[in-house]
Image 1 (cartoon, rainbow, N blue to C red):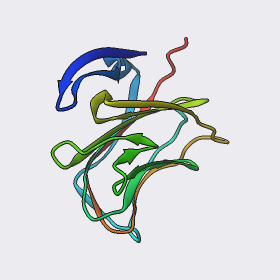
Image 2 (image 1 turned 90 degrees about the vertical axis):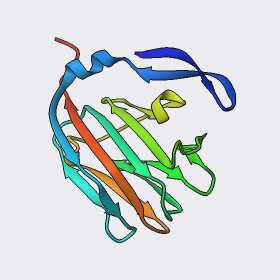
Image 3 (image 1 turned 180 degrees about the vertical axis):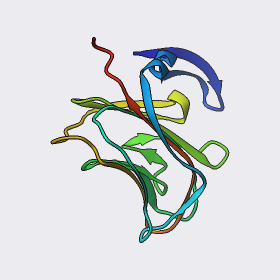
Length: 156
């Protein structure tokens, strides 16, 4: 579930969609990475276990042509040259891109810059996800922060 809001932007009034705050009630184990330089030959990762995640990352757009987060075999890519996140137009705000990715068994919800863009896609994994990886392509990027919350099921 998402909370829909109207916000005034440089492009006029726009609708934003952010995951509801109640998702925090499902947070279990937390994994973090602080400010980290990520290069094409030096990705960063956190070890995880499970299949349900709330992933929150902030990137300072650097010289990378693309960067993003990989969960199992699925990559969520920000293309800096095109200024798009997973095929959705998204310009940096104050030089930064914020991503929130909610991973459920059959789906992945991608939220950019606090709800400016939202996409749901199919997600498949053959078993527990053992790590969440941050990568860069074509140059370095600075990961300002990464929080990965393993989630408890909402179903009893």
